[in-house]
Length: 147
Image (cartoon, rainbow, N blue to C red; front, top):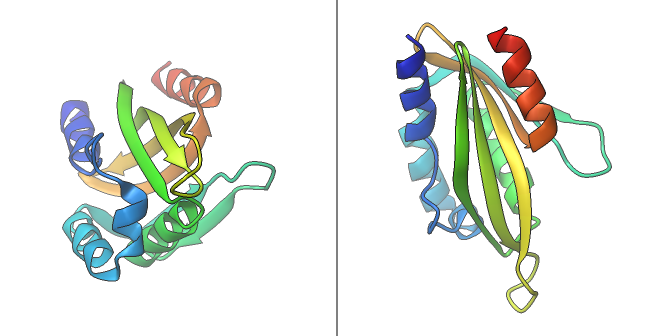
């Protein structure tokens, strides 16, 4: 089942050329993207978003949780393009490593963030996700799960 879990998680990722901040600022585009994701989510899906210098924020409530985390994260950026650097298949947990190219304002210089998302899949549905996880921590999570 793990190969299917990886495929499920990867099917939800935006392409490296897609600007997630622009997508998130357009309510119709956000709704269309999230609706395409909705069928993969468990109704009790919850996620955690890590913001620098703050305790992780937990979002509960299926698609509403994902929508809230998505908009909270992306409202801080005028541009956010993430390319997948790698994936670790840890059975029910799938870790996706990203290199995000971001700008706070349109005229700001581009910065690069190295973050990961840790997705938990149960019975073919996404039950949780932890976003904006530092690479070192994400590797520790993946390898402790796989062991």
